[in-house]
Image: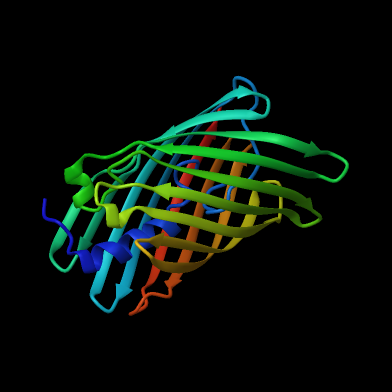
Length: 262
């Protein structure tokens, strides 16, 4: 397995951060923005998500593929625990890397709910377990334990729902220059067209600050959710990213996923 050149590796990871931000918890697929929904006490959920991204930079093109299974269990009516282990493939200009990324352990706690106002708030802490030094060098994940915390607001609306996230994280690696602080803000309207079909949109900004240098990545996504029954969802989405690096990186990611609750 060959390593991606650093010039291609850094923008590829920036794309992963924006396009795969939802993968650990998988939120309401295919959204990056999470909602406050939980499984309820004893409820279980299996999710499988696939994404295929293409990133264009001044250094060339990079392809990013991710397959992420996630299992969620309802510890209480308003408290979930979940685990995810993504498999990734990076390819650019003859270089290639593939393997398991950072395993994620997390929880979602809906700590406030107002039925009268149809508003709810939740917190989502996540712990990212380290990959091996070889996989870190190949660009497949962070080599030290990392963490992130997301505050979630969900508001029911006449057309469906509106979700907003504010997140902060710390990505740690063996290279001191690559220790990064991540911040993300996003908002996602969901239009319920019928009992089985929803249209979704997602707008957000993620910043990555490392070694005194910062990169901001804007993203926008459009998608659809088809639910043939109350416990099964099929989702598709298309996400576009652009950062402010020099030269700028632009990416397009297609996602597809299935969610089963039982």
